[in-house]
Image 1 (tube, rainbow, N blue to C red):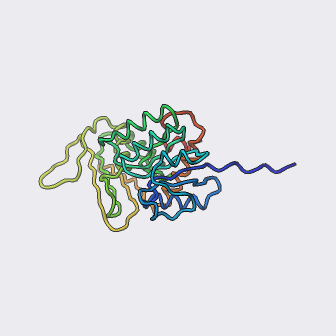
Image 2: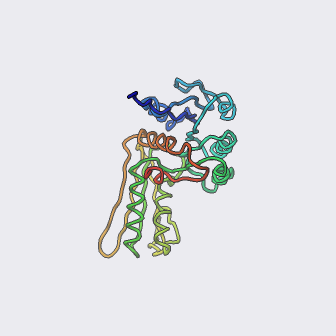
Length: 264
């Protein structure tokens, strides 16, 4: 009996290839048989170390490549908004981990929704499997601990742009779904500021080269419950984003959740 041939790898284009996260993606993809980086896009191509071709415009790159299954994007909100539309125009799945999309003038969230009418789209603030598990635990705890105070704290490296982190905001949203009584977000505290029973405390710390740490604290009834996650390096997120790209290809058009893909 003839041996079955290995499945074809998922062919991806990586945007923002000169950024730290995309550099991790390129390195991680090189160690996997199920993914092939066919091209990369960067504003400064000369700074990118990659075996694949590196260009400056996604539209031209997708036009030049005969076959691309997915675009994996870690850039900035305005670029993500543009790239989502470009991927949809070329009938290519779109995976993005860009954060800070809410309230941006370029309306990247609207661009993702529009693109999802044509291709499968996944936006996640965090591609860690551990964070996916943490989110489930946070939702369960929030439902089981009515009336408890909730504080969310995140710590990242000193170069991170957005604060609070996208992951912290996602965790807050998870709590709010289970606790409709929490209607305000208190970003830090100063001076005389007793706690409002309807608030969630939200705290961002920036120091050194911390990859990412998140804690959700529930306190009440003379007890505390603390749920936390720490990432050792960015490779955790790179592997998760590549897992998402592989799982997203061949799906029907629409918006998808990272945890949803992990369950399949």
